[in-house]
Length: 236
Image 1: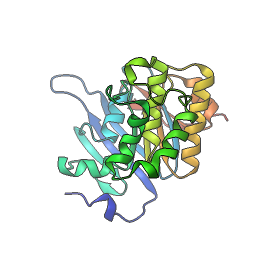
Image 2: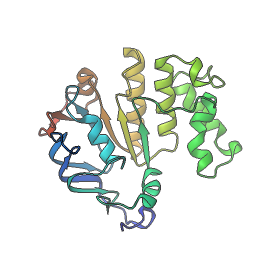
Image 3: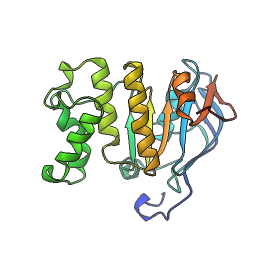
């Protein structure tokens, strides 16, 4: 049983994957021999063609799946065979942006973003201003009362990002977070991730947008056919 993240001493690595393989029974491996270190406070882009295994790698990091081989450490703790009862404690230290948004259609934009703070025991009086400011930052200041079915695809994506980062998590994992927005908003959202990174968050963004990755100045990783290439420094 892993140590509780609350009890873990500060570590220099947010995540470490060692010899990780992942696949489904009766099918070729999706990921093979993945070795990856995400230093605390680092910023990485994960690129590669469709089907390369980017989403699978993110699912392993967010504890949605377990590796077939190898080991995974998060926040200094071995989570390779983590008990499901311990997963929520680790996930509370993450902000995850999913490709399918996973918004709650019966809640307003404001309440969707506020939900993680509410679940953590906060009161609306304490977090209302932060939620409003975040929604303004992602261009939804005038849509706070709108529910997801009334939003466009790009608006839903921005709302999902706002919800993922409102708690200022230690690890931010985003799967194609700029896929449904225009270039101007993509750059604005990139600046949001960069600002959170400067505040200490470790950021990993999976994206097909290699031009955005290279503009970011972040470390760029590439997955191809389930294998991770040596990282290279992107041009600022």
